Amino acid sequence: MRRDIADRADLVLVISDFYARAFADGLLGHIFVEVAKMDLAAHLPIMCDFWETVLFRTGGYRRNALALHVDLHRVAPLEPEHFARWLQLWRATIDDRHEGPHAERAKIQAERIAWSMQRRLARGTGSEHVTIRQRGPAQH
Image (cartoon, rainbow, N blue to C red):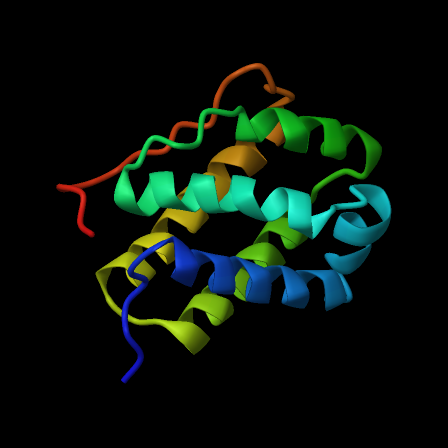
């Protein structure tokens, strides 16, 4: 039995594993590596802040997640298949490493965020903040 996502250390491993998969992916890899030229060492703490806020309500993430994707979308349009693949890789990464309420929330919230972002990019709405909605009390 896999254990649930418990803390930032778990998130570091999940996010590192996810990006290793995404960077190597035939559909997404070039977006992360060639277009965004993502520096994972610099990006990892930001993503940990994001997912800690989503899963544990830490409030550590205070950026506009959508704005970065709007800029990227202008250079390399992000299509529905990109979001679907991103979600597929995220779910697989979570499922390979963890199970439990936080793991399930990570998958559900990723789907909500991805589809919200996809809709906003398709409408050309980039000035709004992506809202991270939580259900129920924070669990640690």
